Image 1 (tube, rainbow, N blue to C red):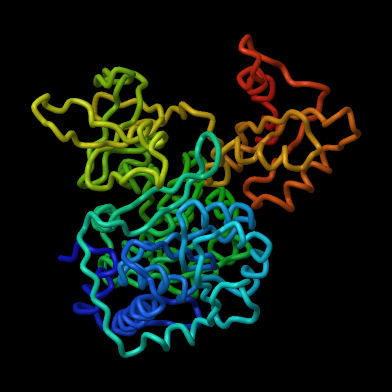
Image 2: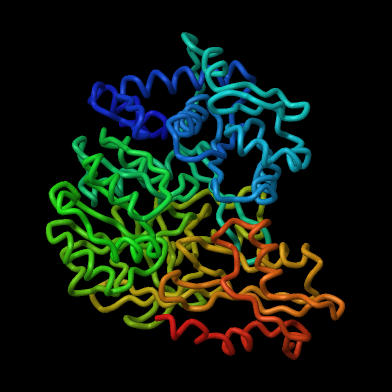
Length: 527
């Protein structure tokens, strides 16, 4: 069995060569064809000067070329960095600069969007444009996809790699400041694919719909679990929730993964009868699935298994609740996935008694290698696992999640909340500081605080409490319109409240806790 991420495709080619591996609803590649394409792309990266551990960013919608770029870069010894297509130029530029990206794969429209910010990415040398390069990228080499792939066609590339080498860097929002890059090794990602595909009971007959962004660990997992067993991953860029249901019918989908806000929308639709004949399982992660949504799904899909899961990018996936227990324990996030151990500990790292809140700690082969170029934040989240014998001189490192949970007498876990100020909205983790930095850059505001408020459909909605700059006339709509230009949709505030000044705590800082309490029930009437 392979221990390298990109070799999952080759492993399945050897077993299931003529079975479909990847589809974007227009083109279907078998495992033999996908493996050959990865060879060509890997050789093309090598011919273009990619060195071992160089970073390759992919800023594109879900398409076959995007998948080939990621896994091809891995096969060439590089590290792929999938960038959420919903991000705006300033967020993309930060990621490209932060992890010193040397090569970027993108589309013509996205390259035009980045034109004014690429100069802030000094390490970027080559831009590969799908399908073809229509405009230059400044002084950088700019090449169309077909021309790029042709440079490596027929060549061989062999880069020595082991399972502890970097495979990918996934960016996730931090509780303060800019997003942080989670460094994942081949071992992390292969272990995750094997673990998840084992409890989902995936087989080569599965057709898994890829709905979520590939920049999400949860979205990327749809590819890795499919490739691990020789199943087919079907890529979908949807506009409306109904498009997801249409794709499930048309493609004969057997596995569907979504986040709670999308499940809320899907549950309100009338599901075609054909779906119940093919859809073997559905999964939820990225937030708690409301009970009524689970009930609606089960009523429309009586033979479909519902998996409720919990995960964090720093460990890819942590827990799942077996479908047979969904009715019995609808509020539980389950127990540890295969090959992982989940602990609940107090502030001193001691095990908590049953039903006592504590921090969730994840140990095992899925634990990431820390945050890229950020030792301070790495030291906060990646610490020695609790309870190790004192004689171990190089301790095992675990992920200390920052999430508060309880564990009952039978070992089932229940999510309580986060210790930090992260906002969980529409399945995304949003840094308040990242939103606030954009608000201050507008020049409209002298004080600004972004807060998460419980919302019946979004999980949490972003609410901004702010004071206008210099006593000027500013309207909430003006602030929101600025955010719509400068932030991805999921970061745009649902509401802006303006007042002359914001309250302070005894230390002179803006009193976030008081503001959070004040607006806690803001969306209660919408429930």
